[in-house]
Length: 261
Length: 262
Image (tube, rainbow over all chains, first blue to last red; front, side):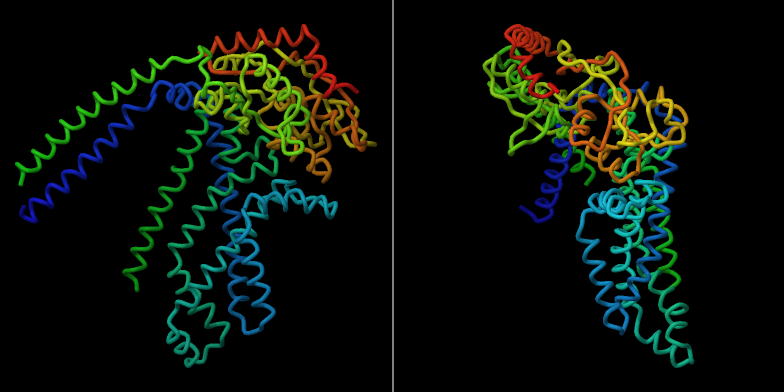
């Protein structure tokens, strides 16, 4: 057999396997039952427009707060980890290891419930407020490592050049190192943001008022009211509507940055 | 080249047609398999879905599932000559019917209140427990009833009839939904909420050790039922027959007193 024939044959087999897999899924699934349980148009209609005005809105707000907070705290932690003063390095390392090692759900639970019980003190925004602080704390641990890697990836020559122009270390960091570091870490930072969007769904454990529900809590509520799982599918769609354009935008930004280098 | 591509496509279509017929054959043989007539997920065992813990209806003690629902369902299964297998599940999956439709279990026993919405997707047994909603507050609280709740924070369980009751009847208060009784009780201990509105049995359990009082009860005409798939009429009839037997021979009262006698 000629090598080209073998290649074509192999490719043909791959096509057949793919088509068979798709056919198997299409034929074997009980589409009627799926339709009744997960795609009930009436139930979907009932969830609109509240799912947009409450759930999507809150998911975006919580993500924005947690990401902004995580970025600020993460930057401080990254700088601490690169500090020449040892105790700062130790503290940052301990923080990062602790909060990166724990499931976000447990951290949220601890902040929302254990802290108020221990100190007889209430978070602003109640338990949910405490949960949001926990999200900031957790995301900061991940973001800190990303920023640190970004700073270390900036070529040493850039820093030496800035210093030889007479810039102080702090000014060099702010005007030369950090802008380049953030350009380098745009993709992993986007990853953190997308993960955070989904992690807001864990806030349900902290307890929420009706107007404060994010997408997942809202969907679970609607599931129980209608005794039908369609709202979960709707929520899944909403997450995709938020994340897909976001990742596209960042990919564009990244290409733009590549050209700028 | 084009010719080759066409030949590949043809082969694919032929093969998939073959697969199609094969699948059809599989389907009919599965339908034809005979069983006990109860439509059980696995023969000889009654698989039961339950959201645990929900004291005193279902919880874990000494590594075993126990509680009012669990004891009752074990008796029912024994009466039918079946083993019981308890499957922990989220309440959303239970009350929307996904747990039973997905074949996770045959029956749900999870303090499920019988409602018209749920009855659209689930087949309920005869009621086996009548519940009341109650308002529980910390000892010494100035809240004496639903009318004192304005400006306060009330905790309810997400996806429950208690939550629905609070949303309809509580005015001027902030209603906070927690995933379960565990979180609710932590929240009231932390002072994050001023009161809890939920089923009488669960609240009563918290007042046993002192520190909390039930200040009001609400008649909502709600009863719990065991639930299964819409098609499983044979199973529900059998469960109802067993339930009637247990009420008659005193076993029901025995189990009831074990969990609810004051």
